[in-house]
Amino acid sequence: MTDAPISPAVRQAVRESASCCCEYCFSQEKYCPDPLSIEHIIPRARGGSNDESNLAFSCQGCNGRKHVAVSAIDPVTEKDVPLYHPRQDVWSDHFAWSRGFSEIIGKTPSGRATVERLQLNRESLVNLRIVLRSVGNHPPIIPRI
Image (cartoon, rainbow, N blue to C red; front, side, top):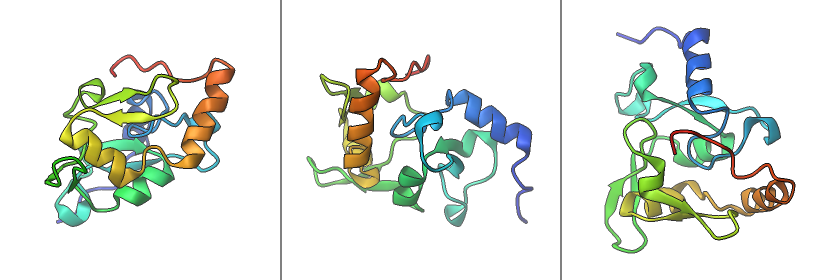
């Protein structure tokens, strides 16, 4: 049995819940060169559903790097740990901004593994964050982080 397609209303609810930002790297939709998309936190290939509780708003860079992964290696402990789950985890429990707000720092095994797997500090993101910060548009204001 397959899930029904994701409705436009659910897509919009996920987008609004994310404050129009990627729920992993916090790229702002209005500054992304590629459209953000709805991604399955637990991929369909691993039994994930189209239920809103399993959907996140994601940039193409994060979505492509996450692919079907639900875990990754923590570079400190070298253990396989769950990736950050935007519906179950609190961002600030797992991550912090660097002093200049240009990089995301993993604070926990899951945070560090997510930073590495999704490359949350890829050069283009860091450069964009620096430019946006210089004009007062970064970090984005997201009530739930």
